[in-house]
Amino acid sequence: MLTLHHLEYSRSQRVLWLLEELGVPYELVRYQRTGDFRAPPELSKVHPLGKSPALVDGDLILAESSVILRYLNDRYGEGRFTPRAGTPDYWRHAEWLEFVESSAVLPVMVGLLGKMTGEGGPGLDSFCDSETGKTLAYLADALSDRPFLMGEEVMLADVQMTYFLDMASTAGLLDSFPVLQAYLHRLTQQPGFRRAESKGGPMKAPVRND
Image 1 (cartoon, rainbow, N blue to C red):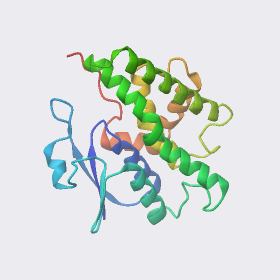
Image 2: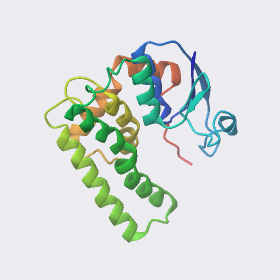
Image 3: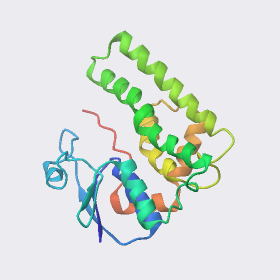
């Protein structure tokens, strides 16, 4: 049986959502964050990096969410959450899937960390703000005439996008992008996403006042 090692308020929510969509049996092992909001040391017993999501399927252990999504879709979903292989849409979708963690998340994370720690500085803040604005405008333009990235149906890239957009929304970065706010709302109202939250807890972390 598949086992998902699931850390609260993490990228793991995306994998849990796909598992719910696929309807395959799986075991869910939940982990709470430590007092400093880090992953607990127990996760290092599953994967050397101590990361979540971590998916175990027999002797195979995977810990990168985009790879896990692809694996589950290919192995258990008959490829139904990607466009048909070999078509132009297949490669456009593959680009969106990689875009999330390669291009989109970096300036947002660096900018937020710089502001949180007070170590950003005007130069870094300006660069991150510029790149974040460019990223969000690019995504909003792609969604201006469709509900999801590839059209009418949720695909892997949409599932992958949720955690990034939730993080951006929490930071107030979507305030100028109503198209992205509406897109995130559509994603989080999907029945599979709602079932995932009922089993794994909310994706959005509570606001900390310390």
